[in-house]
Amino acid sequence: DGTEMTGELPPLPSPVDYLNPSILSTIQSYDFDRFEQLIGYRFHQRAYLIQAFTHASYSYNTITDCYQRLEFLGDAVLDYVITRYLYEHPKRHSPGELTDLRSALVNNNIFAY
Image 1 (cartoon, rainbow, N blue to C red):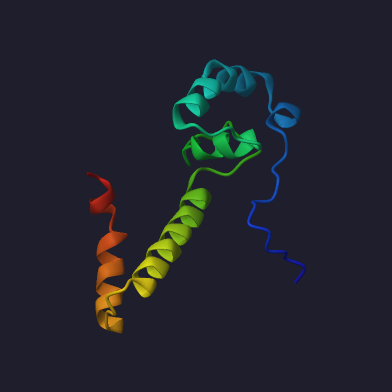
Image 2: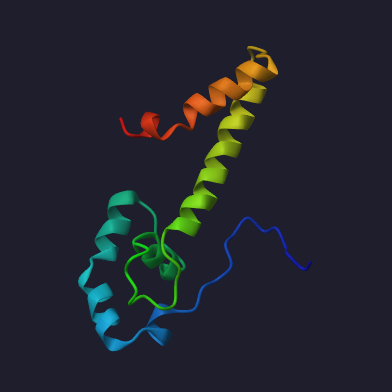
């Protein structure tokens, strides 16, 4: 189907090119530079950062989706990493134990602590 697996997300349109002035001024009021400094990562595609902070009810952002698509992708990556770790763990768990452990580890209540 033409989909290439590169390990990177496809580029989004540049927010500066497509945002109306009112939303652009709102985005500029947030200190994304400071946020990137705090987490120790510089976003190459800032549109993903905007998307990550956009709630579904915020209709003024017309170029990116809300955070939910990125949340879906992040959940899948986390599920894979945990699955692989458990599968390769020196203690050989049964398939049922692997499923139970993975379910417990990806449970949202675990991440709330």
